[in-house]
Length: 338
Image (tube, rainbow, N blue to C red; front, side, top):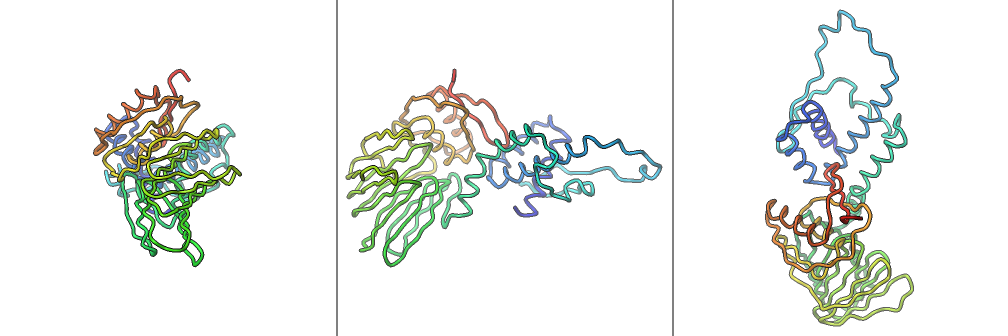
């Protein structure tokens, strides 16, 4: 975390503490949180440090006022701008010493703040370890050294290893379309326990939610799970979906040219649909409990905030899902009645 980003987060914390009922300020803060996972982690760090400091000071006696205090300036701060510019002078020592976040905290507080951090940590780790990553709502296409064309979906990340004996792309998160270039070396796409081996092909891989989907539009792929199951072959026009419980669903291939302004769902379950919405919109979502077993097919426009809000409402209605909590820019979802 950079010092300037840490200062931005402190700005927001102090501004909100000064006027927690300012609706316009809250809206700007929400937009700042939604802009980047790094913003969420920086603000969480401020909350953790503040919680630890307040807990450590709770048992101390009140200071004794002296005449010199009358000449001591009070803490000052300025409301951050919409762009999050830092214009802040903090009281000496308030955040100057960054102690371990758990110092002085109750176990309950540490657990609550730790849970809030979970949906932010995985994307941050994956982004640091990736060779190529995209921002939410953005799609990029690259031609690799072997001539292969790779289209990387929004908020996706890959790690690539090309050597004399093979070509490997590890999908850390998100989705990709691949048009494999002609090369004698094997071409593999890996994701966790799965290995997708190309046999002269154009194919799509998506790991949204808890499932992995592979669809083939040209040629053939062989999908091998490290769990020991025999490889499964998928030919042009077919798709397979692997569920966490081991169920494999078959279907027709849907390998669209990825477009950032349309959310395409093909018989998608709730976790898949909301995970794709998350990547395309940049909003962070997490589940509390069961997501239900409904499926939904649609092409929802998400070109701007208004369309994204409308799409989110439509997804909630289609899957019977509601927002249970909202913290640190992360909305926690749960099935109605679950």
